[in-house]
Structures are given as structure tokens and as C-alpha cells.
Amino acid sequence: MSTKGFMYTMVLAIALAIHSMAFAQSNRININTANAEQMAEVMVGIGPSKAKAIVEYRQEFGAFEDVEELINVRGIGLRTVDQNRDRLSLEDQL
View (cartoon, rainbow, N blue to C red):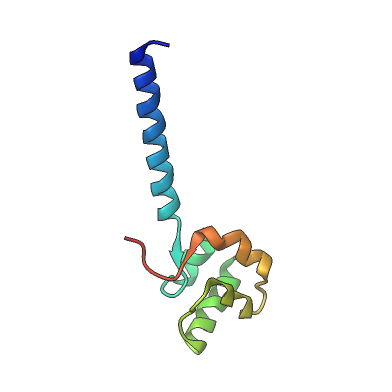
């Protein structure tokens, strides 16, 4: 492979890595501020009714201090939390 081809490949690989990281961060939601529609859109295995239950739980008991507290919401188990762990945040993304 020529030097020019190698450089092109490296630049492309770096660009794709940066894009992937930006996409991953943009798909994270703050479970303490997101509305039900946002949760249902981003979270796996969470439809409108479960997302609404999360918001109602948060309104009744206050902000989540840990993502795993979602298991206290009726209909959400540890498997669902684990499937969504990389999509959830407790603080706003910059």
C-alpha cells in the first residue's frame, strides 16, 4: 500500500471513530429530565406506557440517583436496565 493510500485509510478510520463516538453520546438520555416520548424513542424494550411509568415514578419519588433504580418501576427488570445501560445518563450531555 502506498503512503498516500495508508494516510487516506487512517484519516477515514479516525473520522468514522469520531462519528461513532458522537452518535453514541447523542443517543444517551438523562432519565432525570427526559420525557416519556424521548425515553420510548431511545430505550430498548420501553414503549410509551413504560416510559410514562418511569416519568410518573420520578415525579413521585424524585430524581434517580442510580440507573439501577429503574427496577423499582413496575414492569422494568434488571434485564431491561442492562440492555439500556449505555443509553442512559443521570446528567445532561454536553
